[in-house]
View 1 (tube, rainbow, N blue to C red):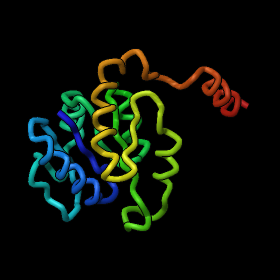
View 2 (cartoon, one colour):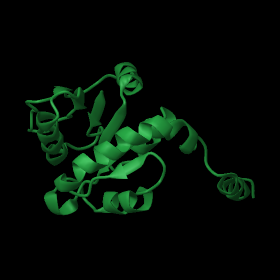
View 3 (cartoon, helix red, strand yellow):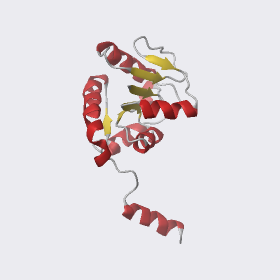
Length: 160
């Protein structure tokens, strides 16, 4: 199953429309979305507006991969559960967020193990396909902790 999540802050109708279109074109794939308070109600994938935290964890565990906005919380969750993630950054110009920081986040994370970016609807199918292939080798390639040099730098700042 592919799990689609808009996060907890803002609606993300553009992403839901993109994934609903993808689900229509790939009807053999199971897709489940958490759509939040958006206006778009998908026709070709199962959905809920809000998923309670205990259920959210179960959905993540049962998923093959995650498709989400480019928020760090979604990336951390995917990493913690060792799931590949396709990021679709929110855009300020489309009134999806107040700034374009998600574009910067996606640029920084692109090409990191288990992380794929769909910059537009035209990129979505390829990003999902890459994430599906990556799922097989993710255990070995996705780090579960920060590099030791980073941890040491943080410790030095906190302990001085």
